[in-house]
Length: 115
Image (cartoon, rainbow, N blue to C red; front, side, top):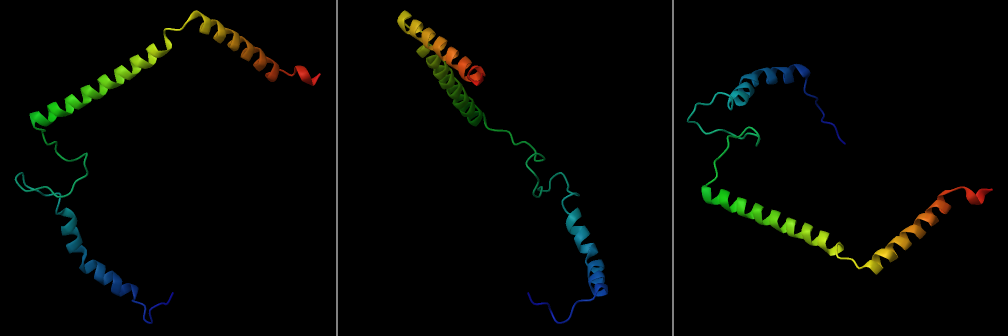
């Protein structure tokens, strides 16, 4: 990187900053002192005044939300019912498999083979 031949003196920079102080203060205070009828400048979204939605837009949003919740309820019901009607044979098989798996787990996680 190359440096400029003449460095600006700190006194010159300080004098320029002091001269621009009023301009910067006016620019910063610009948003604070607004009348009731003047348009507001940029504000973060949590400070903006709420704009009321039209009734049709609100109803459409509620319709979409209701549809989404009903679809989720149907999925939940279908997921619960798909496991419910089991035959006796499959229940017996599952119990035996679970018992075998439990016995294998106990053997695997015990220190029986170490002594």
